Length: 316
Image (cartoon, rainbow, N blue to C red):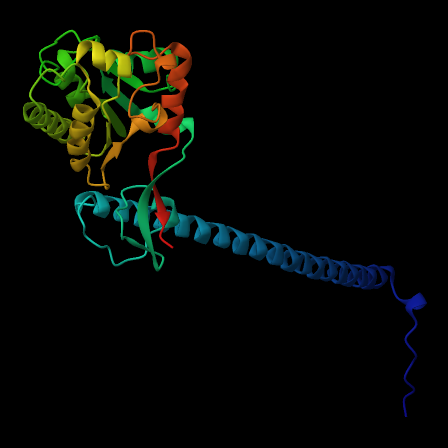
């Protein structure tokens, strides 16, 4: 039997030794490459988890943005519906209204988040008057000079009355009269005090003309809250001396002005409450001529307006 010789690498020819070494080296490289590839695969897996978390966060942000967009669209839709549905009527809206719309275009009796609202005269800050227009005579001009609200607009003149207010084409600088001004400018509130210079006219004629004036203001300022301010009293000495602005006549006219208010978008303000000596007359110490206030007393009128503005609240 032929004896099998043991393989001895030392006796291998040089060529075969080199070939075997190359194979072993290649195998080592392959192992290292596999290890590196596996390591990269693990790294990619870790990066993938991180990217997934970023995607989740981006998705949450996108969802929040979309919800905010839909909320704003819904608020806008409700806002337009309130505008177009005659919100100043007695109509009752059987729907929930977003909180941010509570003080805009909401009528008394509106259901808001299962509660009922009402409009009351209450305190506001000065910003409330930034979109306000004041129309009146020399007394309103005094308010402008000594009790003005920042941002408010004043259209007033000495001797102004409802019988000639449309005729004065120079009343508002840059416009062809008050009507042109009302057609081109928009206000959130319109305060009217006209009646002192009309006292010589027959009462019913004055009331009729005043009502027509309010109607024209409403037509040209459809979204504004209109405030009808009372005719102010004169002092008792002025009344006796000139037989003008007599308390009984002023009260009678003010009562009829009050009837024009609907407490929805037209309100009556009894400004005499803050300028009364207790006998339905202007206190003599408040005035020099019996009619116009001293400068230091106009803030009383101003404070009254600050504390008597239409505010929508939840009815209790």
